[in-house]
Length: 461
Ligand code: PEP
Ligand code: CO
Image (tube, rainbow, N blue to C red):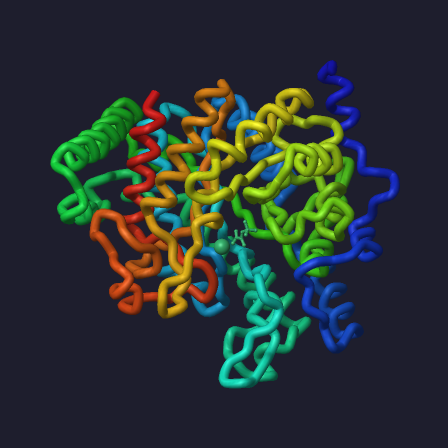
């Protein structure tokens, strides 16, 4: 296909699509609002508010994702399973940005590629649930679907979907993003310097002397490289290079997503201006469903979560619908298969895409296929299972000469105890110490840094 025809195809909005055409399709994971008129009023108000991101940022991300698909960049997409309005605080946002930046430096050093940093941040407020209802002591209420939809407390008022929460989600996203932009623009110089990192976990029991030494060497490399760069430039590193940072969330609430989807002057098509990279969850990617219908018409790059039951036919159907023009950087496949699965599930999917002359961004999400319950019913994940899925995924891509373009993690910079294992050897009994997640268990600071170290080592260029 010539560059001209790619451009022509890429800039066309499907003739039968509008930001609201999803309304005529069956919709999954969409609790009903009691007051339809109030929902309409909130959507209309949201539709009149300023965008959170811009079309040129979205286009820049798309071109960086096109690079990631061919191995010239690597994506680090990470953050909370669910953000909450209560955690929209300076410390929380700063810490999340810090850990993402630190991990991205480790990956740059190992992979020798620029890292595309994408937070699950500033809008990750809506959650699909495996069960629509929750029963406690004989009482049954709607499950908690994330702060954008209802509240976590177990009473009728909180659990009822409230249209005002669409606006609250927008306000909290705007506040978070405003602070993220300020931090990224300046004042973050010390983050580039490993001497400020908390590396106490290197002294923990689970760390062998050999691994510890390898990690310290990497950290020293980064410190030295930055020092040399600052000497040559004669100024601090944050003045020399700016940090790109993008936002992403699951586009679960279509009233919210479509209200933020707009036409932009001097560009064709519609952009979802609520975040740079929205994704479709594993539970809402039915080919004839509302979510696929909505996403096929927006100009943003689109993430699609794919689980272990995905067939080559499913995937080709999704790809043809979301990305008929085979635009570089348009389709991001976030694979979440579970430990032991990549070796059987991934090869036919890679082959199918290759035979269809497609080069998506393949991302490994080693979190969502590895959720297990403890004997006391706590949701957790084993760091070993997460790392094993990641390593298997790298091996499959290598053996098929395909390209792993990125990693997707659920993590927090806080010292939580939600996932098992890691250098500190967290055990089931420890989970109660600091289990804070309202949804899925996240890697804590050390477990996330360890995973980044492992990836940098395994994909060392
Ligand atoms: C998530 O990313 O939090 C999520 C719910 O993922 P998935 O759709 O892959 O289950
Ligand atoms: Co999750």
